[in-house]
Image 1 (cartoon, one colour):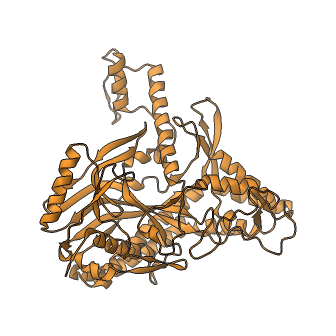
Image 2: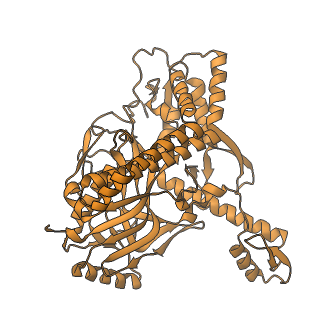
Image 3: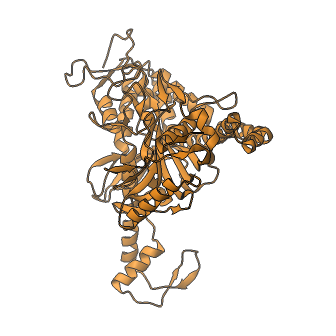
Length: 536
């Protein structure tokens, strides 16, 4: 096989990954939403960065923080306190005021985590290029605002069809809505006031948890099936021949669990009913949507600006088992180096645009200067593997059915919005909101092997020396391979070195990273029905 450059390899790897994420068969249906924006390079994160998902905003006293405070204030020693394992061990005493201080600090850190994450995913992907360059890069539309800003604009400046619903139907809608959202009280750390915050209800949480489990089972099934179809690895072919029925049963069991314990049919029936009622009277529903948006609004402690609470489900995804395994072997290169995929009327070409391996001065997700490795190596001696999970985004404030409804329009009497278009339904689509993210593609435990390639080894040696002097990072396509990168913590955004280890033939990156976002393409919107005569 001829020598290739790292960029050609990156294109082939992404071709196979795209195939695994989007294609299906009789067991796993083909993805209806197969548009992805990739972070280039990937964004490394820690499992602790998502602590707010499991803990909420209730601060607790952490042993390490307590010890630091005691050392700072020089408190007395010799009293008893509970250790991290619940057993009583000799520790210095903390006063009630000190305990309250530590809980407040932890609460502030949880809010900070939630803000960093909400801002990371509050974007509108750019889908305007016909050759689908977003197949290779994360391209964000910045001119018209964030996702939440555009959605708020829609609710404030839209008109809806004027029709009065019977009281019993209004009561049914209110009851259904109460099953989809849950309101809790949080303490505003700035004002001290109790404020309501809207989040997903237990029904929605269960639905999303079981959907995530089904998605992961489907990912594993697709990955193993595609490896076997490539027929370039006897072990992969044998694995499929022997275990295909087991994998198929896992997918079916995950679907059954989604239906039984994830309220799949009930949730979708509720959503369908609400969508159907939208064609009769939207005034009450639109006001409820505005209320949900306001209840999800939080204020950043450091920035002082507002953000909308967004979560991931399941909350324990970062440390859970059961992630799907992805392999790219040398034999896959021929099948995927020029792969083409259809996406809502236009094409995604694996043969164009991905950067190969490069060093960066600023690190993952935010580098400003890059020095790409242009050497060549034999593709017979390259492989990559990692664990992968597709985790749904939970945005209880974003009512997607409203955006696609035929019963609203922008107010034609308002000169600021009368010509606004969210999505023109074109190929590719254009507008203020042609698409929005619905889930995040995470990977972990990445391993890259280039065989005995002296040129690549020399390049890694140079990068290793650069890192020792405070240099940047190394990556291939959307995969972060180690080095210095930005990181959101519970206190602030920082720059840090991420764990990785070089070997003679490649490297290993054990940590967690975001490599891209799955996005939903909005149909033509607004697209009001011509039969509507009265608007309000």
